[in-house]
Length: 111
Image 1: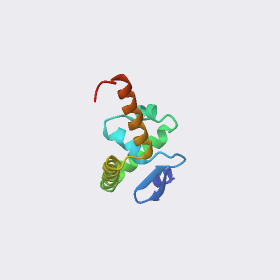
Image 2 (image 1 turned 60 degrees about the horizontal axis):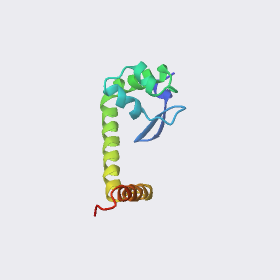
Image 3 (image 1 turned 180 degrees about the horizontal axis):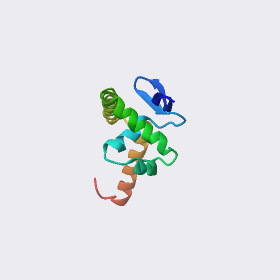
Image 4 (image 1 turned 120 degrees about the vertical axis):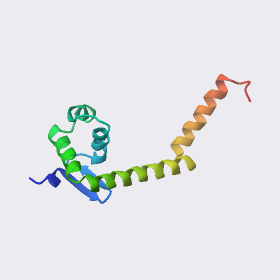
C-alpha cells in the first residue's frame, strides 16, 4: 500500500483522510501544535491511529508541499472570515437581533 492510498485528493486544496470528511489539515493542525497521535485520536475518535500516523508521515515526507497547502488553507479561511464580518450571514444577523432584543429587555432605560 502506498502512503497516498490513505487519502482522497478532491482538489489541489482539499485532501481528506480516506473514508472520512476530515481533511489532513485538521489532523496536522493538532500535530503542529505539539499533540501526539494518541491525543489527536482523542480529538478524532473515529480515526484509527494508523490513519493519523499515515497523515503525519505524509506531512513529513512532503513537508514543503504540505506546508504550502496548509498556508493556502489558512489564507482561504482568513479571507472568508473577513468577508463574513463584512456581510453577516442571515443566521448571524438573526442572532444579533435576538441578542439586541434581550439586552433591551434587561436594560429598558438604556438608550
